[in-house]
Image 1 (tube, rainbow, N blue to C red):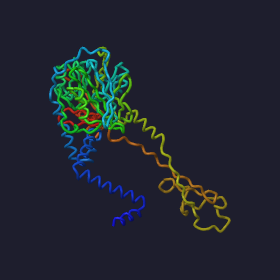
Image 2: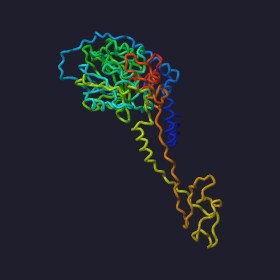
Image 3: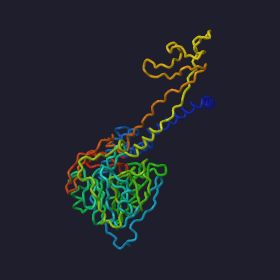
Image 4: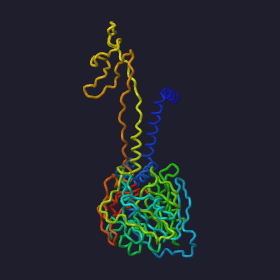
Length: 503
């Protein structure tokens, strides 16, 4: 029986064999994924990874729409719960005896599925939030570092990112620098996810109102989440944190005041990305007592000594961003201009105005694929000519197209030119290749920092109020849903009902 089946299989053509193997593999893998506990775990893990990207809606492929929505709510609720506990500001006792020669130290780090960088900043008072210099678009971190003379820097808060091609100028949440509120999309009494520093250098992470931040003496801050260590306690106590693997940017502080920035490369063959718990455990191993995440995904990067030392996952390299944490030798001399002052409408950009994307599309259009000419059959006269007066033999044309097998020369009644060749004075007419079809214009994908789950290229509206009690802007709701990449692949949300990170 078995030998007859094998002989029957061998009698198949190579195409039938391939199709049969594919069908069997599909059946076995589907049965494993949908009918076994390990398969369910894998599907949910993949869904969590997709949820924290710009393609959150696609997670239904792995778990279905209902389970996807439930997972989104669970992740959101956990983030909110972990952000509530207030920090013990007395827990940090700054080491004032450290020599000044070591401002920062950068190390290579790696895990089973990722590679990255870790930067120690020994005096947190040297850290400042810097924003773009040009109104209307974000700025790359290398440009910020070179422009300001900073020693090093990492990306900061999230932003509205239509199509994953946003211009980096529509922040989400709040931005503070030098004690001034440069941007906020919430009133001063509404809590927001905050990552910032007080004037003494204490790292503040959690949900705080603008009024709270001013009372605590916070001078530099951005909005992002999740928080993973609070007052020395790890907040991820089971599982991997629930957000899958992705590029990450995170910050933590030790009890002696030392600040640690971690940047993990991801979405690449040499580095898939890290989980939240892996980053949390690295912080714990260093004695960090408070830690949380900054914007991640394609925005994750670290710059040191004017050089980009990590590998952003964006196909266009460094992204334009709305904020960054930079380290300075003389932070008191740094002046940060409020580029959002006076603006009532902020265009987040998108595929329609992204310079690298437009250049790429122009190059594609300029080099259309070459059409392969297909010769047609030689026309055959319906009857063999019997007279020397045959017009073909005498150099004339074929008979009228309406009477010919092939037709030629004249356009058809539809107005479209015929592709069949016109007979020439020779006995065998030369075939004319058909006209090539127009080259299709590629359209941008649906991912890449869409607004909420569906994405949008419409401009976001915001009313920044550089005052102690800012007023809400018209893009507050949109800001809560959009993202540049999510916790590291996610976007900070404001109220409990906000959407989870997308990026």
